[in-house]
Image (cartoon, rainbow, N blue to C red):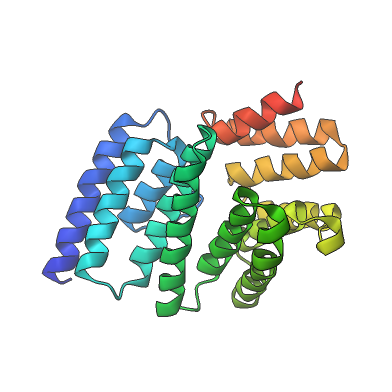
Length: 248
């Protein structure tokens, strides 16, 4: 292992210790891998702690400035920006959210330019295009980004049709797209269920399954799904907000 890589792992390992020391829980990784960076990213996703996310963003930007040819660093940075987007949306900071989604998309496009064979990168890009629609004027953003969502998800599925995140992203596509443009609740449910059959430890996908059942009108199934999410990640703001909405 080269000295630069050892230094990088040492920095991220130290950051992991700091993040884990402030975490309130531990659970199975959605992005399971042996790389310390993946463990850090998963812990940050679970907590959505803005201070931790900003520290990760700074470190990754530094890594990219030292090695602009690393697709993985750009992908990791896009994930961090996506988690920051969640934070900004939760506090209704539309300006910061709009900036975060654009930065996440830019990082992913760079990652895919360097490695176009990553199914997860294409799936995440599809999700971000969908969020770009939600943040903008749907009348104008929908026609522009809607086809891109479909295109990126198709690429991801062609690359790896046994990846739970690929199926989850396709489920969001079917759930969030208006029916007249290809939205389909039954296909959304099927996609989320396939994703969870591959990896049942995805707390966020259980919430999306709950939202699909809610849209279908099946309140009991929706509540059951969101409770599964909370069992996996009791502090999930996404799951808590969805559970509160279902209980009104």
